[in-house]
Image 1 (cartoon, rainbow, N blue to C red):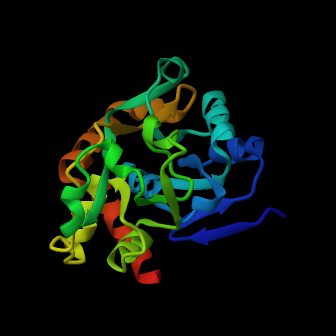
Image 2 (cartoon, rainbow, N blue to C red; image 1 turned 30 degrees about the horizontal axis):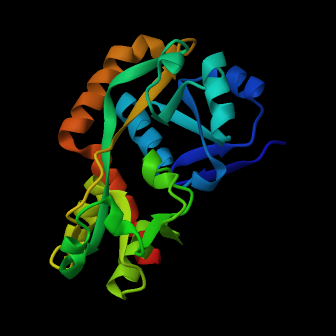
Length: 247
């Protein structure tokens, strides 16, 4: 017998793709996947939001990213979130526009130290908090001369900064500013004077072989409304606040 785990209203199924496809033909269900370490994370919440807006159930399995891409392309999975745009991927998948997230990397420090970081060279000699496993803009990511301190989470970075254990940290502006505001820390932590010019767009895409193709226009309307209402940003901020309480 195959095992199932119910997590936050989502069914996680350890079932081969072929069997999932057969079961999906018997009921209106979206087939999706996330990385194993993030099954309770943001991607799961985004997928559940989309399923709720469509009025459909969703089955989420845990699969590494490369395999996820393959299975969506083959039609064994219906949908994938967290995609950057590329022409190669657009030839295989159907992107849903607009981007559901537009994020900007920014450096944050204590207010009194913000003007000490006026250019990229001022990062030298500073202890910079970076989220473990996160991908940043190339010049910074590839610079091995900088002192980068691995963080478990954004909340950990905020705590370490407040206790002067790091000099600054880098994270998405949109969610960090909202989180600092909710924690009433805007008078203590702010963006540094120097900032990279770098933005990331995250898209949702569906398989060209999925029944969701018939719902493409509905999906686009859902994403447009959600972006206008900042629903995905609110999901991200609420998730980080929950993680902060755990921290």
